[in-house]
Image (cartoon, rainbow, N blue to C red):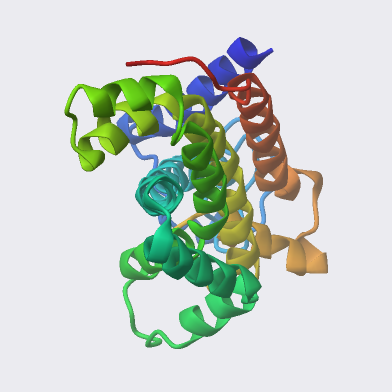
Length: 268
């Protein structure tokens, strides 16, 4: 099932990238004479209230949401890997300081922090900057939970046979951590990576639905969901972004289930 999920995600991403090569396909082009048009050969998913092609905007939104969520998750896991690895392997005051920081971040209502931080941005900020700020905030607030998992894994490897052998051969502690301990946690890191992506997708969808993600005319899955707030535009084709989110989340869940096998064994 994980291979099927990866294929589906690949097809979604390929379609979102291919839309740039379709002549006349623009997420911001308005056709006022077709405002609110029903699905047709010209507009397979109809047109929104400004006459913009829903399918084109959905494909652009798929590209933006998938790529930026993946990039933010990669940044988050990198920070979590370093912080959790240092805390779990070295212990002592490093562990105490990092654990206190993790407890503080995990105790904060991060969704409300996102709402407050996004609301503080100027109203005239560019759509691209607001979108990058959104995923930057997600990456800054999302590393604590994966760091705890990495810390637990690093603590379990600290006195393993392959670590003791590396120390006996004269490896420095930092080299042991970077070359032996963290590579041995690769399954854990991959599982956390695939778990974090859908979390970020849902978080951006919440912000976009509330109007606190990318500004117009930039499309994301979250901003496209705002159309569901208008009862006059509530048509079956308006649920296409929600269907895309559901399909992608299911695919990531299947891939994460595949990657969440228990880790073990030396990879020295």
